[in-house]
Every structure is written in structure tokens, then in C-alpha cells.
Image 1 (cartoon, rainbow, N blue to C red):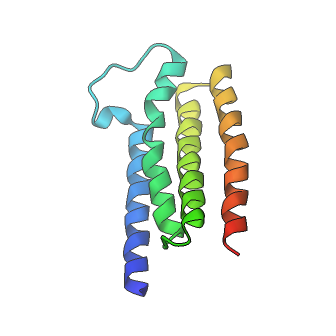
Image 2: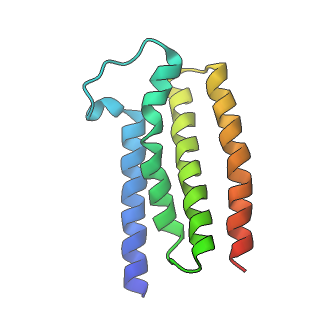
Length: 122
């Protein structure tokens, strides 16, 4: 059990680092030009947040059952990863009001997901 937990955590750390690297520099594997529009420039980074989310899930959550706890953990982790990638994009590409609206929406969704996860652990 301890060995599988250690492996999951190591894979989680690897996914988080990979997600952060590609969110910071998506051109490492994409030959698409960087959009002139700041909103679109940030959006090209967002999907790498899924790697960050899956990595954080593997880093902190190591069980499948009960299912509600796993669903809550997965949802919260993925939302967290998207939020991190979006904030990284805002930091690197610049700020746009529409992106801050998306940050607010993601935070508003993340809070009840974390509450759901914490309430299903008992």
C-alpha cells in the first residue's frame, strides 16, 4: 500500500511539473503562433491545467471508494489545475477583464467542490 501511494505521488508530481512547464511555454510542443489577442494567448495555456489537476489528484487522493469522495476530489483537482494555468497565463501574457471573470467563476465553483470533498471524507 505504501509503495503504491509513493508511486501515485511521484506520478502526481511529474504531472504537475509537466503541466506547469507546458502551461508556461506551450510552444515547446505546438508550432501555432502566439495569438495577438491577450485573451486567446492566455486561453492556449489553460488546457495544460488539466495535467496540473490530475497531478494534484494523484498527489493527495489515493482511493477510489467511496465514489462521491473521488468524484469530489477529481472535480476540485481539475478546477484547481485550470485555475493555476489561467493565473499563470495572466501573469505571463497580461491581464484582461474577461480572464478575471473566468478566475472568479472558477473560484466560485472551486469553493463548493472543496467543501463537498471535505464533507464526504467523514
